[in-house]
Image 1 (cartoon, rainbow over the protein chains, first blue to last red):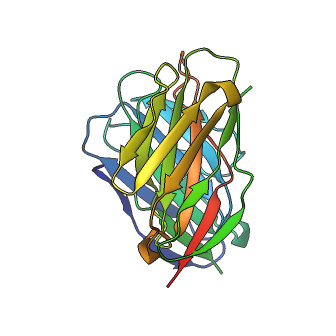
Image 2 (image 1 turned 90 degrees about the vertical axis):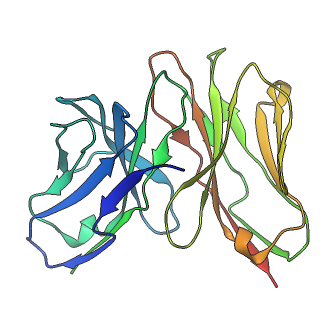
Length: 113
Length: 115
């Protein structure tokens, strides 16, 4: 069972607010990822990190930003939320060599009104 | 380029029926890894199985079984005697190894098991 935690699970905020979605893992994994998923739709990689102080943009362009100051922590920030940011955000992590299993958190459902 | 195709968008069965979810993949790499994940209505993505390209043995875990065939580039997932709790979206995913740590996901298959 994966030990990867996301907070908040559910968030409803107003347009223009700044939000940070938290993600922490206790498995010591060096790789971490953020995926965005609209309800019933496919998953899109928006950010990833292969270690501390390393962050890259994913396959889908996103207005969000990430940071990786500590191995276990990979927060995602939206400086000014818009209704188009309404989605589920899934954090994930993996360790070791390529091809190892990527484990996911429970997701954060964001609604911007 | 990598690609995963799950042609079945939605499947509906009655409890106790067997159901097979199809997954076809494309990759030019000789070493790669295939995965299945389950996403129940609550939203989390639950890891089910990982298989590398050198191991074509079928796998069985309880009511779940997986059929990996390199000749047809398929990695199909069968649920035997389905139950209502199996209702979820199931994603097939591919990692081509090498220096690539990322997953390429299919679009998912929504399975509904009716009582």
